[in-house]
Length: 307
Ligand code: MLT
Ligand code: MN
Ligand code: ZN
Image (cartoon, rainbow, N blue to C red; front, side, top):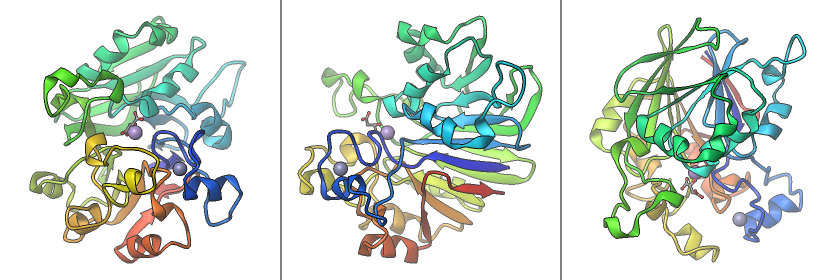
């Protein structure tokens, strides 16, 4: 099983178009210790020939251009991309579907809830229903992803709910503390091929014991790396929301992911969905050193992992 990190940044990317924080300034200036990153997406393949996107970011066009395995190979119209699996309906995870227009067969997997959000937004009808299948992803049920010709891919995906938040543009201010969030709004994915197992959790607000037990023993975990501290958007002066308010647990502190993962046996642990304010994005920061010393890898665009 092969993974490609197409985009390792959170929504907005690094640098973000309107952000003038210290990190973004360094990235924009071409500082070699502040490598730019595109928005949150991976690709996975069991055979190196057929690929599935894990989330489809607004930067997908550029991500496909930068990753040769995703280029057309034969005929006048072709794509190795067989489909996409979505973990939520956030703009950074569904915006790229609009890039996949032009009557190309695709299988789009998402929970019923997320499929409903796409269905209710007519813009996504640009994915020609004659060619694009929208397939419901049941919770806690292994599903073998299928190529567009129906052939089994060798990749089995199980979606499970994780603590999180409904997409920003669907928040219901009248619905109380959780803005109307339901379990199927944010899922994590267990992805397996034969006996190789990886997890993908780009949005996760907490790691309760049940979730810790679930991922224990995995060879590879891609995990929510949005913020270093919960109040980072405030302290860097770019916003008023905490990580928790956005549905993300931070890396540092007693409630952070470094601490939560410290006792969980997993092979490789890789941060993805990293917000542009996060100091781990800087190769020379003490926070980067601390994360690496805790056994983490900081995801970067173009990172390849073979299991
Ligand atoms: C998130 O991960 O919190 C969202 O992508 C934020 C957003 O929609 O901008
Ligand atoms: Mn996001
Ligand atoms: Zn910034």
